[in-house]
Amino acid sequence: MFGVVVCPRCKRARGADLEKKTTACDCGFEIRISLSRTGFETSDARELAAAVGRAQAELGGGAKAVEAAVRPKRRSRDAFARVIGDASRGDRRQRARRAAEGLAREFVLFTVEDWRQVAEALGIPDPNEALEDLARGNVVYQPRPGYYRTV
Ligand SMILES: [Zn+2]
Image 1 (spheres, helix red, strand yellow):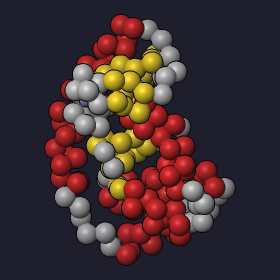
Image 2: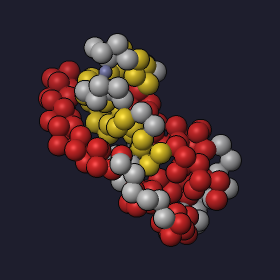
Image 3: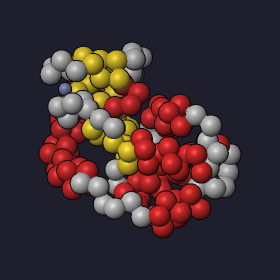
């Protein structure tokens, strides 16, 4: 299967073979597919090209939202408490998913630090692994290095 990934460095969309771990961007960056893929999948090369075009167009508009969100809003204690409260039910995987969704709801983009803070409170033992797992499961992606959002 092929999918669309977004380069964390230059933020261009490109097609990638989802069987592979990484793909090289034109800018020279080695993109980790699991962390950079969007939700799109296809086995059809023409569909893939169209999807890359659409993703690229959305990134034009999305870039502004990213810039605004990256100037971090103050992370209030209340916001973290809401995320943690909301994600405290279910098994580990469900808690991780709810936590990511909650962080995206509160902050739009969240950082690895935000994630760790919530994951620790929820007793998720390996925050990095849990985050990679969410990326592999298409729950989150990384629109720019170190920042995550839900798909
Ligand atoms: Zn690039």
